[in-house]
Picture 1 (cartoon, rainbow, N blue to C red):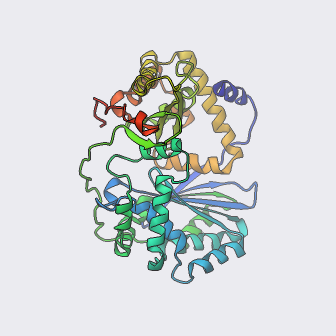
Picture 2: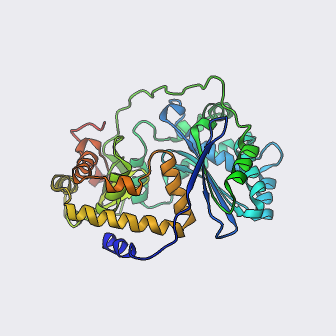
Picture 3: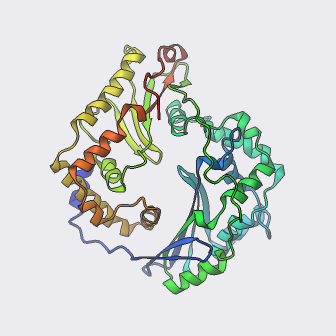
Length: 410
């Protein structure tokens, strides 16, 4: 239904997307500018990529805690409360978030405040002074957030499965992080050649170049980056993950991150095709930032091992069947319709430009060239049994019935 609806929307005449104009600062920061004078607003999103080697063993959760410290600490010229007052008083929105691949800062401001907005972004990013008095409190808050304490068992299970085996933060690892760890992490990771900045809105290309160079041109990389490319030691996965939930029904989940060689075109079309596939019910499938999530809530009379086998059988059946040329054409049309709608949503434009800037975006030309064989090969690769981690939330006595998978997770 979603594919058909988006295909119908493709017949609408919508505004053209702004042209992406890339440039690179001398320090290696890549910038992608989307000029759009329809509204007097400017949006900026800065994405900083992280790698597993950026977090030392025994300090799992370091990046999430660092982001919380950015939110709660001041800069070189203002304390945390004063910095927030600067934002509120100028009508500038500055948000920060942890993404599956790194950390992100996003700014929204009136075009007349663009200089001040980029200045505050640079100040928060480059001149942060971590407040040691807040470290232990933020570590405890980070633990509650990572565990999803207070969230539903299903949400807690999904969060646990989303973390790479061996990299899941624990209360002990977060408590072990010191102020020196945070400073070293920032020095090692905060590099302009790891970052991508996307600008969208009411400013011309030359304005954008001046604005970025003035505020982020002094951002320098360390002479000898520490830890870049150092692999983490392999860790045996916890499979299946168990989230005890006394008194509640059983929920089973299987999660697989996208294969490293999955192309953006295949990923985009599977995002449209897989969730509504008629072969899957009663299993529900969603594609989220960290991968494909299959969920099954069996009836109370279904043994847990039988229910887990049913979930895996549904995914295997979809992989073996594949998609037809007609389904490919419909999904391709739906994707084009969705892309045309992006011109009405600045946040979608930023996300699309950022994906393309990082080599993870599809274009109309590359989508047109996608073959049915490539689509089905990507589907089989993603649904391969050894790509999935499994888990369950429910009564402890029911969870005890689940045995570890025989196939190791790669």
